[in-house]
Length: 305
Image (cartoon, rainbow, N blue to C red; front, top):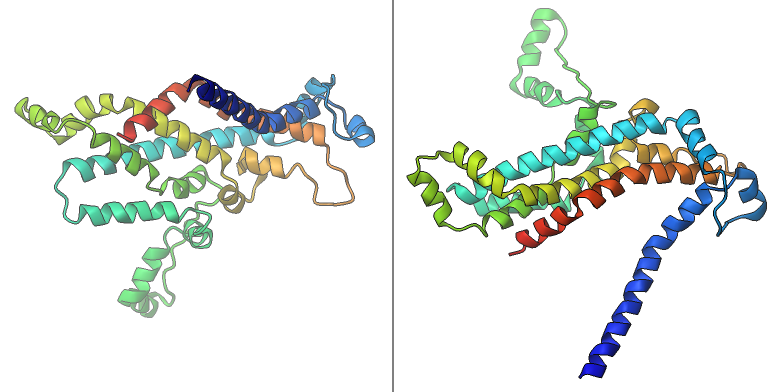
């Protein structure tokens, strides 16, 4: 049995090492390429030893591209998505678990349905709403016949127009509408003792005080876990920021990084500069993971009890 266990440990170690090589290998090649010159890549191709041009490539990214501005955009969008999802998910799960809401199982099922309808699936309708968030008001005026009356009086119908495209709100709001966080908080709330609510009522705590003074401090770990996951999700979004932002100064870093590759197939991209930009774009989410990894793991474990 000891020999079998040792063999399993060796096999598991080999598999783990191969997995780490599979994940870390591309990152190492990215950093090595970022240290080469454009001329070296043109003449020698992929390099496996570091060069001495990283600072020059890094300077080119900061001075010749819109990546610095787009990094700020990505930070604002990712923080907005993470904060918005944490707050809305916490409030929704609080209502579903601690209030006797009619058909709350059905409501929870509808919330979970949003997980199967990410923004990539509903991008066309989401774009239509974001291009004019007052379109429901226009539809209501048409259905009720008020626009016909207004046309008779003023000679023309009223049409409200308000677009949130190329704004931080328009970039972040559609990404917040998903039920992943509600599921996480609901599972955590159900692990809490049932007598906790009774004790709070005996102490005279109302629902709002119970949520802020008791439930919120207990939920800091799931908050941190969800915040990290949603920050990474908001940071790596590509399709919706690409559709919702037509201006370079409002695009996110992931979209800006893709635009560093020229559309002309006859021109060889500046791979060292692109890899330097990729390293810069990846630095912030990697830092967030490194700082909050412990809380993320603890939050996921607690939610599964």
